[in-house]
Amino acid sequence: MPVVLIPFALIALFFAILALIAILFPLGIFNRYRVATSRRKARGCLALANSFAFALSASTLLATAAVTSVWEPRALPYVGGGFVMGGLLGWLSLAISRWEETADGLYVTARRWLVLTLILVVVGRFGYGIWRAWNALVVRPEDESWLVAAGIAGSLAAGALIIGYSLVYWLGVRRRVRRYRRRQSL
Image 1 (cartoon, rainbow, N blue to C red):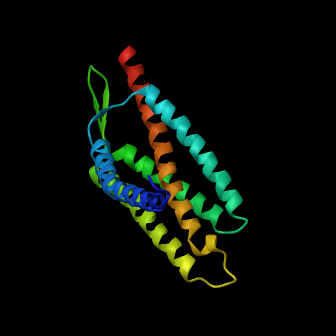
Image 2: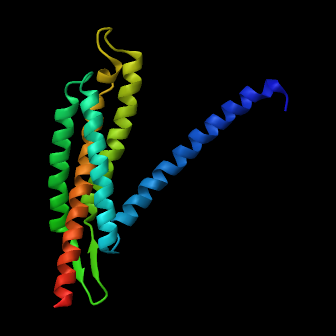
């Protein structure tokens, strides 16, 4: 390949990757909704692993918000509010999900409207964050940092909402599975 064509090949590769992302992102969102609203067996080991993973994610997000609060003072309070709201949504999800105790095991089906709401929060904040970051690069006051203008505190809060929801939800699933196993052993 001649050296002259390498930049054109790289540009074509870049646009091909962008097109692939544009195609796969909606498919991934649809698949996430489909899987999250299906009837699933509640497994204790999976709930425990997810609880640990989300606890690690929560501590990492808190550390990130603490560091970010040097530039954006609202980051830590927004993250705290996101964790509280996410925890409340997690408890709500545990309360309104359909739980089925069978001889084969404990099964759970999440409510579609709650799953759709959480997915829309993520997608909406993702899109708004991209628009806000682009806008902050183009038009912003000289004395304001790009990080503040891009609305990083809101993005961290949306992440905290999802992590808080997931942490409380999986801790609740673990608790329900343990309670189910105790009743089965009697």
